[in-house]
Structures are given as structure tokens and as C-alpha cells.
Length: 115
Image (tube, rainbow, N blue to C red):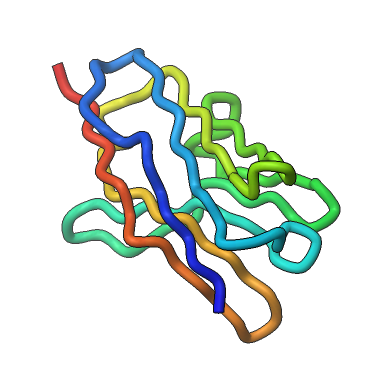
């Protein structure tokens, strides 16, 4: 069983930055691909960043160049650095650990981009 705990959400003005953290319950980064997803009201959950067990990263066009995913194996923590935030980035952000048919989720952290 993998436990994930997100933190770092909040209210930020357009153009601002936030860094989200996801603390995992153990050293899982060599086993699980780690991702950040978001879900806005009335919309489906969407992937915003992924980092593979090998360290490769991928982003959708909507956040490419603005968001950066990284991980710290010593702290068992995955980060999502979000820059140049837009109102459309407002959502609940979830951390995910994925391997084969296994998926684990955190409880989510709210990010609101508004002036």
C-alpha cells in the first residue's frame, strides 16, 4: 500500500508561482511512475505532469514550459513547480503513483488562481 500526501496549494494571483509537494510513504520512485493530475469543477481529471522511474518527464501542451515535475529520492517527495499561473489552472491537484494495474492517489490540494 502506497500513501501519498500533497501540500502546497493555495490562492495565487495570475502570473504567480506555487510549488506543490507530494510525500510518499516509502522509497517508491524506482518502482512507480509518479504523476500530477488536476480536476476543475465540472471537468474530468487530467494529467499535467509525469516523471517515470527512469527520470523522464512529460507534459501536456497546456502546461509545457510553465510546470516542472521533479523528485527527491532521499525525501521520498515529488514536486510540481508551477510558474506563470493562469486562472484556468484553478483545480484540485492530485499526486499519483502508477505501476502496471496499480494506482494510488493522494487526497488532493486546492490551487486557486485569481486576482
